Length: 301
Image (tube, rainbow, N blue to C red):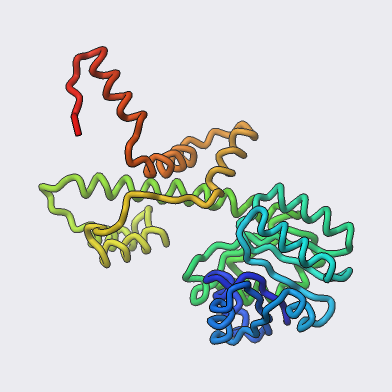
C-alpha cells in the first residue's frame, strides 16, 4: 500500500520505516528539514509540503498523521481538507482526546472523507518489536487499511484490533495510558522501599532481573526498569521530575464523569504533579500545622 505520513518525529519516522521494511511505500512530510533528511535514510520519500505529499499519492489517498494532540491536529486537518477528495482516508495515530476525534470524524464524513483513529503504543521499541494498535472507525476504511495495521503490529494476527466506532481507538488508548501510570507508580514505590533498606545493600537491578522471570509482577515495564537500573544503579543525574502528556488526566476525568472509582490511576497522576514541586507550600503548611497542634519541631532550611 502507498500512504502519506505527516509528522516525522521519532515515533512517526519509526512507524513509516517499519512500513517501508514491510513493502509499503511511504511519502513523508515534516516541517523540519532535518527530520525529512533522517526519514530519507530509512527509505521514506520526503516532501516539503502537504500539497506535494498529496500529489505523490494515488487516489483514493491514505494520509496518516503523527502530530501532537489538540490544535496541531485541527490545523493539519484544516490545511489538508481543501486538498482532499471524497473517498480519501485520514488516520490520526497520535494521542488525541477521543471526543475531539468523534467531532473530527463527523465533520470529515460530511465531505466524504473517512477518519480512522489509531491509538498507538510501543514507543521507541516499536520499530523492532511492533506496535500495539487500538483502532476506531467505520468497518470499510479500517478493513482497507488492514495491510498497514498488520505491518505495524508485532504480528499479523496479534497486537492490533478494530475496537469500535470513531473515537473508540483513542478512548481505549487513553485508558491504556492511565493503567500505565498506575503500573509505573507501583514499580517506582516498590523499588523505593527496597532502596531505603540500606542495611541489606540490595542490588535492585538483580531483583528486577529475578522478577522478570516467573514472577506475577513481570511485564515489559519491569524489563525497562531492569535496563535502567543496570545502566544507572543509583539513578545519578536524573531529576525527580515526572512529566505527563495528558492521557492520565483524561482518564481520571472520564472516571469521574462515569462514576467509576479509579484511586490508583488518580493517585499516580497526583504523584506526578507532586514530583514537580521543588518548594511545596502544602508540605510547609503541614509541618506548621503539626507544630501548632502538637508542638512538633519544624525542620529549618
